[in-house]
Image 1 (cartoon, rainbow, N blue to C red):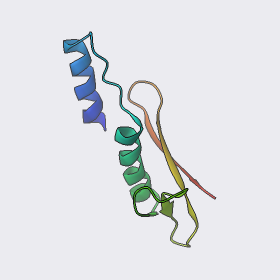
Image 2: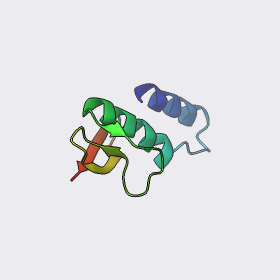
Image 3: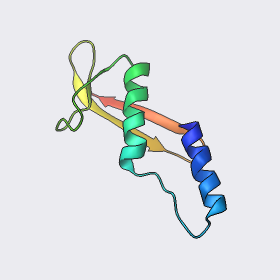
Length: 80
């Protein structure tokens, strides 16, 4: 993700009249992968209603990835 942000900042500097904001999919999907890998979650099929992943014990839940400030990238699982 760091490289993605570097590219976006380069494009914004080169083309200041354009905005290169990441949308939910371009930020959310990588966040799901990072959270699943880092938290040992099993990802469900993409676009499964209400749930993104399942814990090893079988608890299903959503993964939310958010961007906060410059380079901070946070993947936060909300498994209940």
